[in-house]
Image 1 (cartoon, one colour):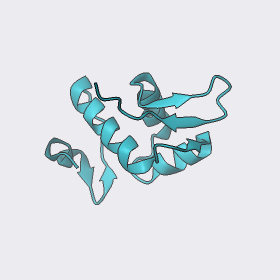
Image 2: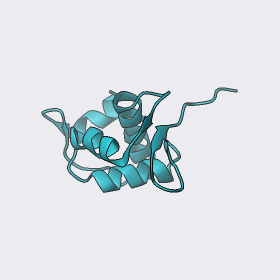
Image 3: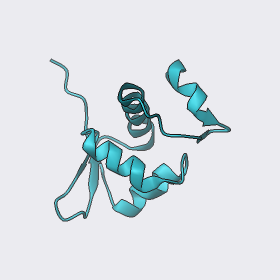
Length: 88
């Protein structure tokens, strides 16, 4: 875990979602990389269950990840997929 993020966790749980966009993005990148496999689809329930292991506000984490382009949601909401980084 990036050092800057350790203050947002206590006993393995996220105590608050960072307000600063740069820090929030770093947190979301960390969570998506550690909670989700790159080559697999997840139902909304599975995404919520994964996020619930670190924080109770699963809908906020899910929304932030989709808005940040870290998770892609199918138009019908049937599945989510982690976006893999593309290096140039």
